[in-house]
Image (tube, rainbow, N blue to C red; front, side, top):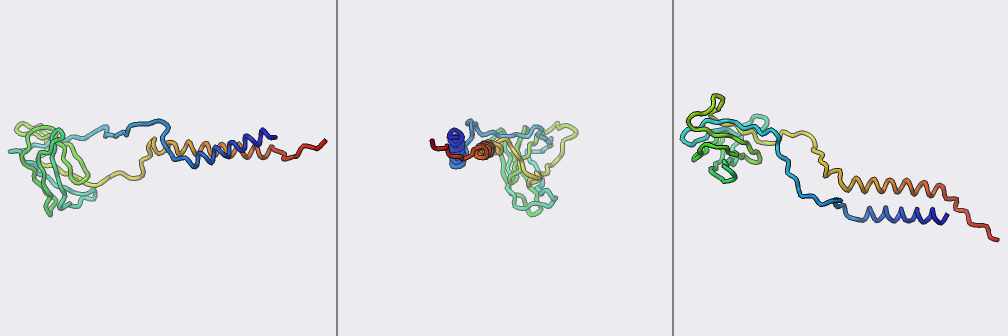
Length: 174
C-alpha cells in the first residue's frame, strides 16, 4: 500500500511541476518562413521605363494614398503614392524581375521593354488585403502545450486508479 501511495504522490508532484514550468519547445528550431509554392509572375510591357497601374482592395474598391514601391533584387528602384483614383506611375525601371509592394501586398512582375511576349499586359493591377479565411494551424501550435496536457491527463488517470485500488486499511496490531 505504501508503494501505491508513493506512486500517487510522485505522479501528483510531477503533474504540479509540469503545470508550473513554462511552456518551451522540446528541441530548439530556427524560425521557418513559408513561401508560396506557385508564385504568379505577370509579364508587363513598359515603355521608357514607366510602369502604370492601379491599387484596389479585395472588394475591387480603388485605394488612394497607398505607398507603392518597385524593387529589383532587393534594392529599391522607384516609389510613389497612389492618387485618389488608386492609380500610380513608377519610373526609372528597366527590364527584369521586380517586386511591387503596395501596403502589405507584394506582387512579382517581369518587365519588358521592346519585344515583350504576346501575353504581356500594358499595366498592372495590385490587389491589397488578405484573401485568407480561417485560421492557419501549424505544427508549432501543437508543440509542448499538447505534450504537457497529455502528461497531466495521464498522471490524473494513474492517480485515480492508484487511489481507487488503495484500501486505506491500517495493518492490524499484533
